[in-house]
Image (cartoon, rainbow, N blue to C red; front, side, top):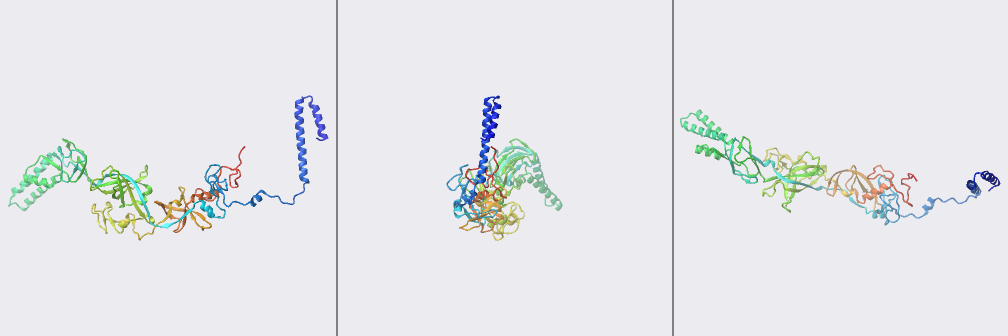
Length: 525
């Protein structure tokens, strides 16, 4: 301590003697510490000023580290790209995930990477060519068997009357055309029979001397009486029987005009019926509908007239076949499905309404979404009945509507269109808005890969139809493409989830790792 400083200390101590020894001691220690610190700083400054400059340039840490041999391949974590490890067997010290190679900086393409052969082998990269071939897919659907509505017959009362007897008195009864169903009494039918008998008697009274005009008039009355009974449901044999007996019956038997199964019985014994009252509902089950639910994503594979195979729980191992006769134009918004109706023959009666069915339709699609159907090539099909197929134009044998060409129903011939462009489904990385594949553009000694956005069509099994972005023969990565995309993210280049590129947000730091591209935002302490 200098003489001046010592003098100040003595005067301060003398002044503080009146304030207490404790306070004096504290202040003396503080002043001595500050004075010593200042003198030490002066000595260091003088030493630096008097030091002889070194003739050797200072070695920077970067230069020292650059002289050290660098590892051929570094490994990092796809979740924490700030981690760098020299050993591929290590795991991420933050999350414990397996490490992946850090790709070389040799490739400067915006969405391209060049790997060493060893790195490509570690990433297990596989490639496959883009091909042109028919896209074949199987569409699975579920549904149930239903009654063919076009084969339902409704037996009604054609004249007012009272049912006095029911020959078919429960549902489910199989009947044939001409079987008697019920017997009922109708005063109107009695009157109509009398009119027939009177017309016959009038012709008999005319005899051989009747004029032509009189005979013509009575014949017209007779024909009108016969037609009235026919329109009221009497069969020709019943009318002939009345004419022979010349006797009106007070009870008339109702016969079935069709064959089928009685699915509903509406009338009861003793019930009075008005004209048009329902008596029976008869269903012809020799042909049934199979109503299936198809997802909207499968609609591009389904066409009118397409063959469908289905099975039921009742007959395991047995396959039934039908044709698509209707595709609902309205989508079920709640279930996101479309009803597809299939016509199926049921001559043996195995298919019963209400049965559950599992169906599968096979489709082969050419470019442009046209379905290939060699069996319908150049054919004409019934617009309401797909089972009606002819070699030339004409009318449907069932509904008499004009036939339409198969091409108008969405089919095409094998010679009119080219095969679609197909890419393996494993090669496509999809974000919901975009689809990306990685092309192999390098050689075996210098594997290079370049990302490319493409426009996809529908999926066909293990393949996707490509509408734009690729060419036949392009080699795409089918295994390891996600690792390549992760490496692009680490390099802050355009990738699947980040099409514009940018620095990766690491969110963690690791001692001893390279944080040159990590988030350097300061932390509060």
